[in-house]
Amino acid sequence: MQQYLKSFAIDYGVVLILSVLFLLFVANLGLMLFVAIFLVTMIRHVIKFLQKEQRLPTAQERNILVWGNTAIAITLECFIIFFLVMMNPNAEQIIQSAEKMGLAGYAVFMLLIVAIHFALFFIAYQWMSPLFLKLKSRK
Image (cartoon, rainbow, N blue to C red; front, side):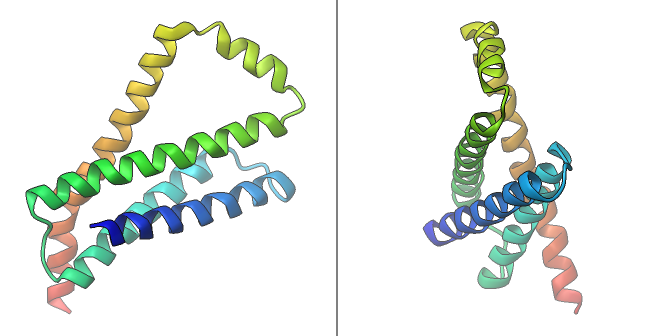
């Protein structure tokens, strides 16, 4: 499972860094680009697992893949967000407004972020992977 987690980390990290550079210097596309990158990378890695293994992941493998990819995605996104905030000319105001949220606000926000990532990876590995495997077997 480590090879799939490392592969996801490398692919997602490189694409995020390149897209941040693109956003900073070329376009002003905003958050929707990050959501699209996340979804495409997630689906690509589900398909990569199915192509290499030629089977659905077991319950233990699915658990490792879902939680591992969730942790990797959130870690990479936190670094990118930190970089974007520090590059912003209004960084001090952003940090001050974030401090007003308080500890409970941070906890709820991070819980929602983890839940969203977990749900998307769970859907991808639990429900979408059988569909992808059926489509591959038809070819």
